[in-house]
Length: 312
Image (tube, rainbow, N blue to C red; front, side, top):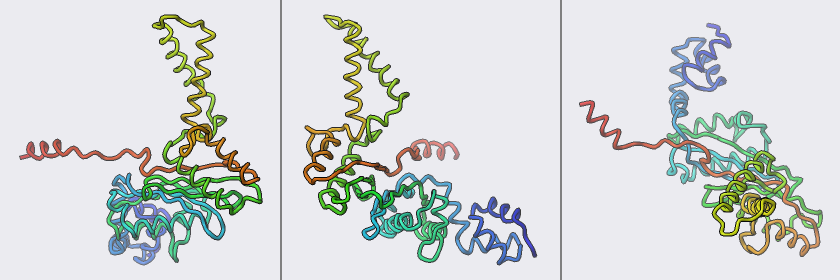
């Protein structure tokens, strides 16, 4: 019995299983829908698809750099529980996914799912992992840096936070151990301080205008109750000074360096470059925190008990 693309689409909507798996099942079932669904259930794919509705806000972040090619990648993969995130099999899967990103350079998560992973697609490997582990697992996001920069990975608390740092360095400093240690320190800084921007020049005008508005309102309010109120031009100078403080708190390069808070991160980078006799510039960094921005389900046990009692 022949089937059409519309039939594949219909089966996908019925089962929430991927298009290619639906097509294979219909081919094997000779176009018979009931048999195709049975085949998908036997393979466990339909069961895995049902788990996709469950919230996955745990999991781990993995940042890594290839020892051979120098390409770096950082990826976040989410699971439903922290228990699974500590599973060695899950951690290996995430690490292997980072390696696929390094090797295949996919454009986005969907492209990553189509990449090869040990003789099968990442999508197939993901579905297999969902069935094995028994939880919804989602590949959320990733970033990749080419080998034209010196890339350094930093992983914090077993994958709670990961940072990938890209440094532009002069030829004489490539492979230098001190440069790699500097990259690790910058990654640690970004993990701990969670800056909103890399440099003060990255702060957009809208954010800056809003911050000025808030700081000016605060300064004017303080001035009202001051024993000796200041002239308006002094108030505006105060606001300029506080904007500088905003940069120091929210911009990575302007932040006080965690290991030596008398200098900023950019001053520390410059000092290391001078000491080594070369050039070093922070080109970019990516910081992922596990479950960041995902709304977690909160179980209300008391409400659940009350609803059960009311249902008697």
